[in-house]
Image (cartoon, rainbow, N blue to C red):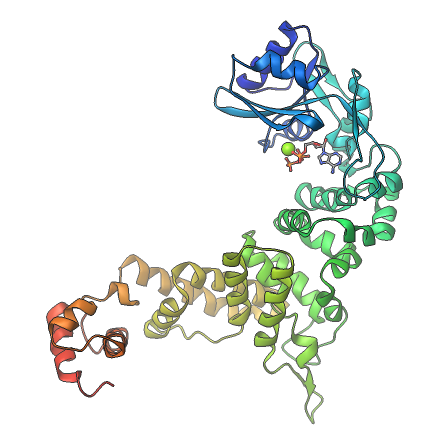
Length: 447
Ligand code: ATP
Ligand code: MG
């Protein structure tokens, strides 16, 4: 079994070996390399104690004492940042998050035993080969996520592992081993002890996984624990001829048809979360959800803020949820108004959300998909032809109007918006002389 290591990793291993220490590339990078996926990061483990690592690399390579107390040193080799960690055994976990103390060891197998899943508990050295005491490679072949050791105990130690496991299942398309699965379905309330930020990192990665929908469906209990607002969607019948699924099933179908782009994924997951709260039934027994986008937007904002998402993400996802159901006519001027209102980037994300929403309605959404295709094509043409749809594209600006004698202040903006409107309506050409002439005529009338 030969695993290709980057030159920087080989140099770091050799450097430690030359100083008399054992060293291996370890964890996720070996898993990914065996799967032919580009690893996120390369980690190294060694029997050198923290001070010994420091002495070994200092002076020869830039070192950063990122977590020396816990046995980790970051070293820059050939422009690559490598985390090098002393073999260690984790002590007791009393807070379900991190060990109370760590003990260093000279035994590789003990270090591998503290790792979460068998597929993450392999180490490799070019001359010694693959070290795989927990049969991670076999589980890779079987596409199984299995805890190293006793699942119940491993999740009790660090509850985040459950979510990491689900993230791996979603991104790799793997199954959870039976015992591991049972334990997750019983122990998920321990996630309460984990920092929101760490949960959010895993949720983001999980949602981007090719198999996110399977995991969301199978582990709905975990997700409704993390986001209780999801619960009313599950099994909520829509009583409407435009919908063949309940709200949650529709959401999952929409997600499976959605692009793997983070704000789109979140928006699709949450777009109908307000539906159960806005349901009404008319005299014909038909269900309606008047005002649900606004309600969904409010819940979305609360949920994402609670998950400590950054402001930009909260804004984008909430906007997408707010407008997921608006009708955008395929006429150029209508599209330009939406491009102006949302900006180019969010506009195209909204089309992706609408696409997913329509594709989640089964056959009933076919006509909408056709319309969305047309919308996208026309919008692309508008962009490619650099047609004017926002104030920054307009051939005049505020200074030009001041020179015409328009008093500074609100009137400038009103007049500019009026001119933009005329250009979008194709009543005026976006040329400076045309616009200035129109401005002159309208200085007093537009107030
Ligand atoms: P990725 O880098 O794709 O997120 P990874 O498995 O490499 O996945 P890292 O956070 O880089 O994740 O961790 C590196 C290794 O450290 C893991 O492969 C695993 O062996 C170990 N590890 C990480 N987090 C935990 C944890 N919570 N419990 C036990 N071992 C862990
Ligand atoms: Mg990693």
